[in-house]
Image 1 (cartoon, rainbow, N blue to C red):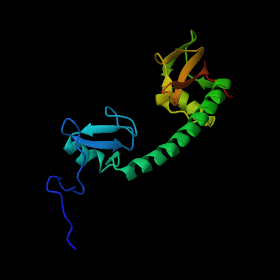
Image 2 (spheres, rainbow, N blue to C red):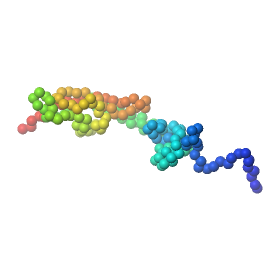
Image 3 (cartoon, one colour):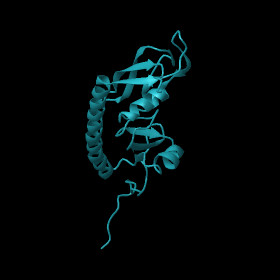
Image 4 (cartoon, helix red, strand yellow):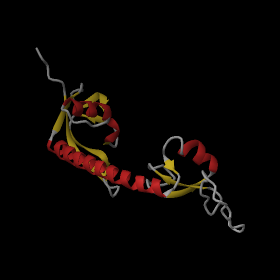
Length: 180
């Protein structure tokens, strides 16, 4: 039995990527891509960028009904994981704020340090107390060069509204204690 085809209607092609209004390919982002969009956004990109960068790295997918359903499920899982991470970061912020660290540094009689205490030394002191803080999270105006007590700001991450989760830690710089 032969089927009739409508001569006015073009046959659908398989594996044809949807084109956007500007001639580029339309893709759905599966991850956040800097300077392009957030996860779940439908974006229009140039053919080469989509075919050679976004698709092979799994950063985007073709916007079919099936892929959009899978992406919605994936977004729910990612949101739950991100909420759990934010709760952990807030607990860590509370723990850091209640604590203080002491750093010994060589200094002269007036209290000026021979060297300086920077983010790396403070992060190391925090890690010795099992507080996992990287030196890039510390926000200091400059290195510490005198014996004193300082408040150092720590930015742990961002919450769902892209507000920074931050806390302060008290850093006490003292001269080394002579052990005889």
